[in-house]
Length: 395
Ligand code: DWN
Image (cartoon, rainbow, N blue to C red):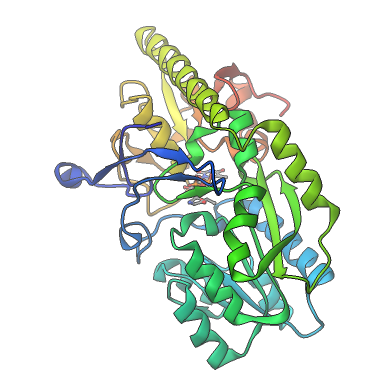
């Protein structure tokens, strides 16, 4: 299937950059032999992750709390008393800060220098690099082997997964674990959350895919734990084959994937049809509101919104502006659709009548924060799992 011509999801730009904007074809595919769902063309990593990368994990308070829980769970379940923990794609240090504060040995490996700088400000030791076999050996030679290599919303960004697996196999101690959590294919298919598909997300994983991708490197899936973050994620735990028991979660969730038909091409034919229905309905709703002269804004200039805006052909006529809390995005335009991004203060000073909830994955946090918007009679527009209008009071 194809979502058509797509810009880089986080390449927010100024008006004088419109003429040179980069586009590629966003075309996902499903591999019936290894079970991966992936995009077939991806821009170069340096075009996406660089010194002005505009996503900071700390933009969601709920995610910061989630990472504190993730760190505690890891410590209690898999770590020795004096661990060395390496995080791949450590961003602004929201996860590793929990180890840094406890005085534990840690290292973040993060390719975007600006987010790594923020991590250092929070006491997180950070190496600006892409993780792979070479970096893994460098880290092992300078710091020693790692008891855990962790990641969150990172593995699905890395096309050379075999390089990651090879690096992990070199860097981990004998009983070390590789733990990562990522948007889950089962949730995406069930909710038609097609906006999880964009340049950075080269894969949307399932247990089936993770098991088969890491097995050739001697790494075995020993536990899987569903997470409600980012609209439905899965935490995967891998260890050297035979070193740790495989928990029942793996068999149970693999059976559930079978029931969902995640191994069948026909499931993705249905997913494509559902995406097209969602597009038609969102576009029809926004066309109608435009005709009626309603004031509509977007809420949160997420990476995901780039897929929605461009796939649905949304313009500033449909969505006058997008409110976002990230200074690096404010004053710029959204990729492809060229919708202005404004600070949250602009939204709060003069509420629009409708707000499209682009950060639907942070729904509870946002609706709770925006009670004044809802109480003033304004409405939320959601598109996951279905296109709906709701008032959002008492959320
Ligand atoms: O995998 C990825 C996920 C974890 O984070 C990356 N590829 C990039 C990023 O994706 P995203 O941009 O879709 O993430 P979020 O967390 O859904 O959205 C973040 C954006 O939303 C930021 O620009 C800040 C903004 N935001 C806001 O304006 N008000 C977020 C919240 C919670 C808010 O209340």
